[in-house]
Image 1 (cartoon, rainbow, N blue to C red):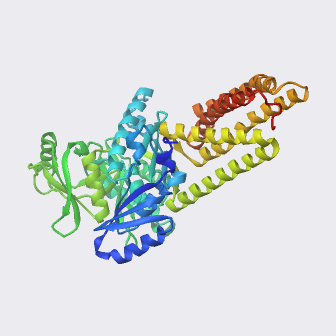
Image 2: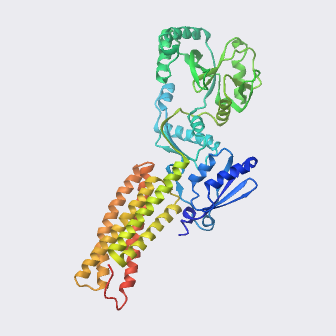
Image 3: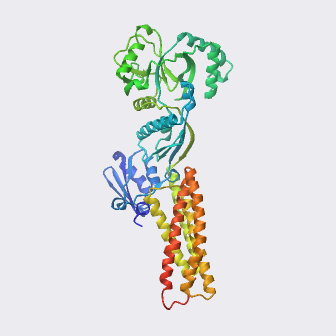
Length: 535
């Protein structure tokens, strides 16, 4: 019981609010936490709430309120005094975002012209995983789960994330920054070839489909007989009617990278001489030497493209040599874009492009609804089984229901102690275990009834009932455990949660049915004058 207190006991939540609009804020909090269920106190800008039902879903829901700067559920005393810990809730119960990213190793193999080994893929995935963890930590997400799925995919679970769109953008951006010299002659030829093709296309614009965009570039490269040492990429402009950018026209760049992201030491946000948002940076000593070389007199009059994740965002002309190791990335950037770019440059580029192949988002209010529905369905199942057992088996049914309650307590205690993440399928596993647990009692009671009908004494009926039903109960639970083990071993996400809950439930039910209830009956049957058993 002490082990499950952090999960089901009374908790304290502290909310840090904006002190300038306290009256309005307190009215919102009072509506969300009625005085009949919770005690609400306020001291300065900290609101303290005590009561039951303060789950992670409630905390994540409060976090979405604009004037709330921080929310924290305080540790229960049982967590401090014992090895107890609250049960973690899955994204379907507390709200959040689940992403599965697949690494694009094919592009690396094409670029390096050799196949990657399994070890290469594992190392690259691990490196990407660490960089993603650093990026996600900047968003202040509590207890994010970032783990590899095989050697080519990464699964990310972000509970209670405030701005899923910004997180997705930071995760999906490779962050590869390159400075490359523009070949003006082949840029002119490619642009003319593009114009001829755009006259036959919708809205005279480059198609939105990425595959069609690349096919178009490849066709143009073949038409103008582009040399192998030069590459065509799109120059991106901003749409006048929206914040999005689109590929406007092709530019021919040298494949030789004059300066890369790993040559940059520090990056910060500022404004250029025209008042536009820009990213200033300083280079490493090696980077400073490279930058001085590429901006030397031999390249004066040429343009140098700033390429971010294979998208050309600006191409300023080189007029003077830059040997100080300090420069800026300027272009048509928004405030959000320069902040993201500066942060990613500081953290480093991902070693491989990552594509989102699976995405699930659950709102915190929906998660709280799922918790309440799960608790309700569990209580209904538990109550229904208990009522049936008492009505049909009388006193024996009462003993079975006590064992059932003990079994349920054991299950929650073990799940809390092991730090298990409870999901909706996990709740389904709990409910299924309730039915399977009472199944053992039914087998034992029917055996005991048979023995009593054959004229056996209560003590003999109890002993024979448990002994004869033992192997039937044991075998059925073992076969179920084997199936649950296979699901836990090869399943992922919800399937694995269901399997783990079912396994723990089966082990607990075997203990309560075969040991605890037998212990109770052994005590009852040892009474000298007992002649009849209420069963």
